[in-house]
Length: 163
Image (cartoon, rainbow, N blue to C red; front, side, top):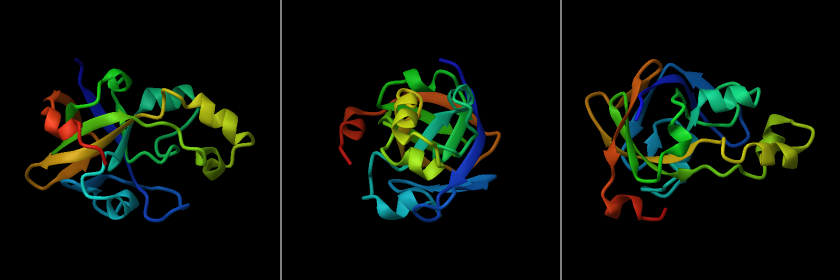
């Protein structure tokens, strides 16, 4: 497996708002990124604490980091092919991939595209991976430029939990 790099970080502060680009974000185990709406509104342990998207997938669709409301954009072409349960060490944070992020029905409307359904269909297999925060070290930070390193597979008791 190859390594990657964090190229962009975004926090969504409120529903319907544009994600805010940040240079670093602090993570909390079982919740997500501090200051991001998803960490406040999801059940602790949810499988959808963060969305990690490959920059190449965005570029292929003519999109920029943050356009799909992902929190972590990476330069890591192997991302989409990794199975649920894969652990990624990103900066001082370990994320467990919980499965592909299926394009939501309202993403096109949020972006103001002419045909939201066609836009949703174009994202199939390119929206990125859902993940949960399973461990933190040191200052609990993820920073732009941090390495993204596959770190094994979670114990079945972790990745089989629904949330």
